[in-house]
Image 1 (spheres, chains in turn blue, yellow, green, red):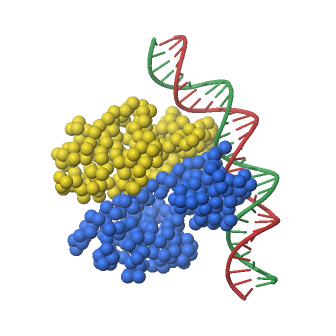
Image 2: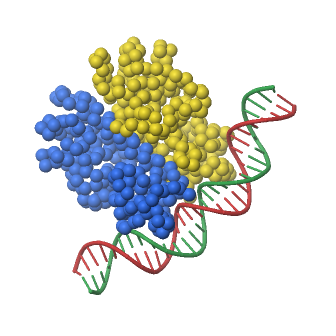
Image 3: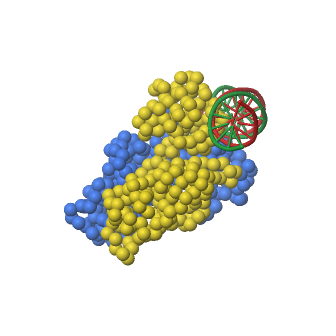
Length: 225
Length: 225
DNA sequence: CTCCATTTGTTGAATTTTCAACATACTAAT
DNA sequence: ATTAGTATGTTGAAAATTCAACAAATGGAG
């Protein structure tokens, strides 16, 4: 586990917990590590809720696929980010989403019940852990809200621009590196891929943005119309 | 405060805390109560985050209004439900949404920092409170996910049917009472009101549902096409 | 370098949504 | 009961999205 220590220390769940104690906790929390290849399914919709995942390397996507196979990407998580925690903290039994490897990756799993319910060993950091978990869940909540703000927009153009401006703010730059390819971006924005490409073209011609592959640059203040 | 006791005891934040202790806590948490008339703004986008609201009576709506005045209703909260807690638990400073009285209502406000950070009085229930708060936040997360699932659908019909089936499941009946009027339902589903009305008509003619005012009845198993 | 496979861009037709305007139904108050 | 005001339903035209099919560009593998 030691080789994962540095990445785990940047995980919100373990904030304020030093390395030595973290290692002790891991066994207490039933930690296991597993690797996945690109597109491999990590958790399926309907799976039993109960394990919390921490991305150690690579990236995973949280998504939903409906009856007709329409893929909806909820979020992409990079290393040190968690998944499953929000569901593990509620009373639901089954995962409402899929988690899939966006690329080759390693995932650490923890038993949620060991975090939520104080264990016999009385390891003193439970309160810290629960406090941290709450912050993680709240922050996730904020992320979902942001996604909601994006796809609440009615047109492809507004969705794209809202998304890009949000990313620009987050990355604090007008040059934005998007973690999605076109199809994935369309599946994140809940729009048609070809329509998205067409819209990008228009915005480029209008001088609103530049785009090379998945590198976008916002050129001027965007006023909707 | 005593007259609100029974409603507060059904609030997730105070689960497992008995009435007497609850009353003691309230003053410790800086509780205040205020009433609002219909459509009155309770919190505005941009307001300082920090107070957690509990609906004591009536109902409130959490919504966002964009540049062009398009209203997007995120959720409606009934008595004993909370708002603001997810934002108070993160590091953001400003509310990203509005909270408005859906009807005449009373709201109890608590200071978030008193819940998050142990107070000098060392009231013993802080851990319980934080644990409860985590569950509330996680459950809210689930709600946002459900809304996301609804508006991820591409067409008005799919959005409506997904919403209705979700409500039917929740209310455990094919007869669904929707808490929104048409315009509000449209603003929740992120679609055009008249288009929504037209779609309801079609579904009614197709024998999929009945609808009288805000009472919907699902008539047969719905298979998309 | 060439070839193959994948990704991205383009286009027009079909579908759907939105918009605007109006008709009808409903509610509450006088 | 009448009326004013609001909510809901209907319609056609305009706008936007989706779909399908293909063209162009990209990126690896051999």
